[in-house]
Amino acid sequence: MGYLFVAAEGLAVDHSVTAIDSTLLKAKGHLWHKSSMKKGVVPRSGIDTDARWGYSHTKGWIFGYKLHITSTTGDLIVPLTADVTTANVPDNQMYVPSTSSSLVFSLPCLRYMTADPGYDDKKLYEYSKKTLRMDLVCPVERYESTSKKRLELVCFYKSAVGQSIYNRRGISIEPLIEHIKSVFRIDPLPLRGFRVVSGIVLISVLLYQIMVYYNCKVGKSNPKSIKYMLGTG
Image (cartoon, rainbow, N blue to C red):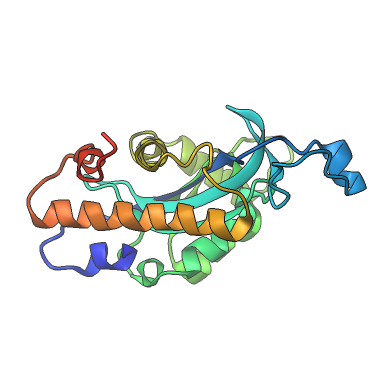
């Protein structure tokens, strides 16, 4: 579906600048505290034993899962790829799987990928440049021992162009994630188990893509109408 948005006739989707992000999703049922988890003890029923603990700078510690998603950042904001892991999987580990699972990221018109500090990884900058042939733009700090190559990343990120590219996140992928969670009510999750959770979350993203595609074809551009089309408004 992500590729369809880019390749379909009549859809002027700007994907020269894309974005990647993740969000934690609370597991259904009781918490499984780390002390009990380490001992392999499930103290009560109703615990999702597939879920794990993950940390968010905005939400703190969450017991559950994580949705990893890429999207466009232009006028039409739509998911390109999505994946689900347990909450303890670091964002940088999912960058390559997220960008290698779709033909979208093999197209020559891609120029930039914007990401938060969780993706600030030397290997990912190199992978983006050599394999995807685009630049990864993350918040980068300068230190006394900063290498020359990293200084180039710092200078670009802090430049007017770099800031303009990075600031697209705040009006694209971040509200997109919240909208998907709101429309499909997947946080907290309604069911337990990794396979079931993955299915529910990924089907939610697919349905969102389908409804946006339908709206585009019939001339509707307001993504909020998706709630009403699905009967959740």
